[in-house]
Image 1 (cartoon, rainbow, N blue to C red):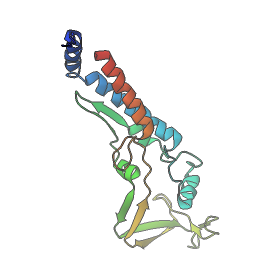
Image 2 (cartoon, helix red, strand yellow):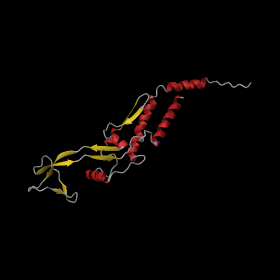
Image 3 (cartoon, helix red, strand yellow):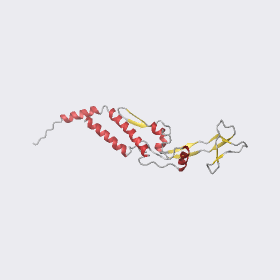
Length: 199
């Protein structure tokens, strides 16, 4: 008879230590939450991984007028990037934003705008003629503040319409909830390091 004896005490002790280590996964969850922040910052810096769609010409024109173009996509004021926060507990790690508009930028979609009317004041000269700017081929009107004495008020109507926003995912997940490749590699490295440290 051929017999092999295996001393499994060391292996069983290792498995027992690993089992104890997996009871407190807070250190791993913390590391993953910090990696989520790092990967999200890298997405903003690279303007998407893969690259985000460019801005529409009308958006570029608007941002050029206000002085925020040329610039970074999704970083007109920096508020969205600055709002990214992460958290963790013993069994999970999360990353996200408290900005109301964050989800539409991450996932894309349509915004349905209701019909509206608003009162607008435009400046006039001493004769009551509307003052114009060089914008819109000389047809642009100059808005009047409440302090301007020479102004005319008019109501403008805007019909209901839909605005489409292209997805520009800044969190390190795709539309199906899968980690983007760069994040997956980093996080799997953290998991492997953690398992080696407890095993």
